[in-house]
Image (cartoon, rainbow, N blue to C red; front, side, top):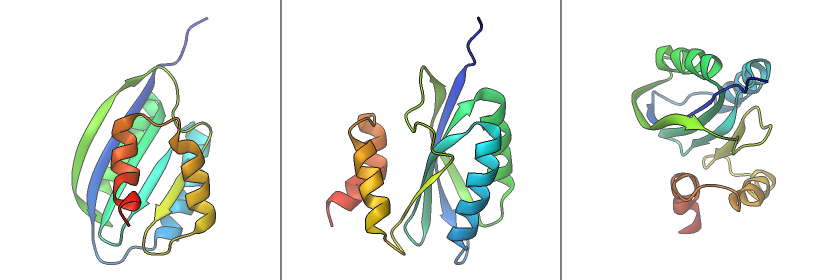
Length: 131
């Protein structure tokens, strides 16, 4: 039985204006669920930080759409590679939004924190832990 190669991309970008993050999250959950993509999105009011993981072709197509999205600019790929297994379970997308913090969202993210690689922990939680 052939296994599907999983790709994971972690990137950072600069927001343009004040994008509707709830709208972005809803579209991400819908589209990523259909494409088998999981991940996490952080938005601090200025910067997006996102990790996407899933089948190679699906992640490539999603990242192509992200690159074309005018709600952000200055996209910087932090890491891009093949992974052996998902780190974000079956989250079609989860949000950490520092502009509109949610105790429930933070509780869910902290529960997953124990399973993150140190570099993902650093990018998504280091600034939170210093507050």
